[in-house]
Image 1 (cartoon, rainbow, N blue to C red):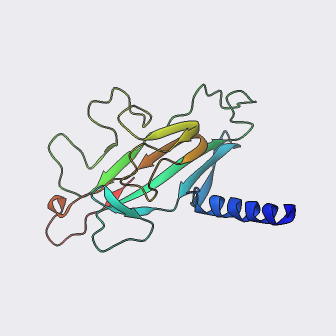
Image 2: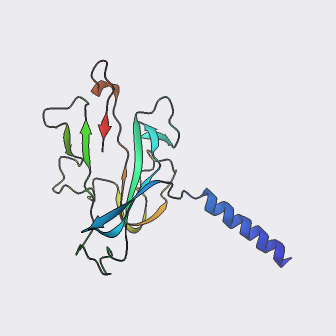
Image 3: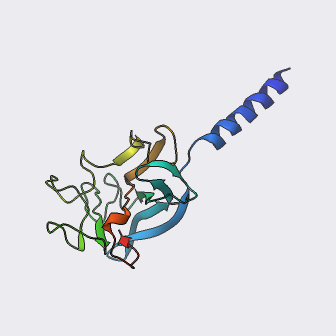
Length: 179
C-alpha cells in the first residue's frame, strides 16, 4: 500500500515538474572580465506573439513579434559577495536596438531600447520587465508562452517581447529589428 502511494506521488511530481514552465535554453555564452570568467549569459528559446497576445514557441501566420528571456548568472568570481574580480556592486543590462523600420524624428536607427521617460539606460526600471535573484516572471503573461507568472532564478534577467506592424515598413523591404 505504501509503495503504491509512493509511486503515485512520484508520478504526480514528475507530471508537476514537466508541466511547469521551465526556462528553455537555446544558447549560453561565457561572460569574461580581464580574460577571467565571471558568469554566463543564457538566452531562452524565442517565442512568437501577435501584437502582444497569443504567444507560443511555434510561430503562427499572424505573428508580429518575438519574445525572449535573457538571464545572467554570475559565477564565484563574479558573485558580488564572492571573489568578484570585476568589483561589481550590482549587475544591470542595457539593450540596444537597431532597425530599418520607419521612425519618428525623435528616434535613430540605432539607440538604447528604453522608454523615453527613463532616467537611466538600464533595462531594470519599473517600466520594463526584469528580475533579480529568485523572482517571478513579469505579471503580464499575455505576450509570453506561459499563462501565469513562473519562478525564475538568475543574477539578473530581462524579458522582452517587441513587435512591429506593417505600417512601420518601407515598400518592398523586409522590416529588420536587431537587439
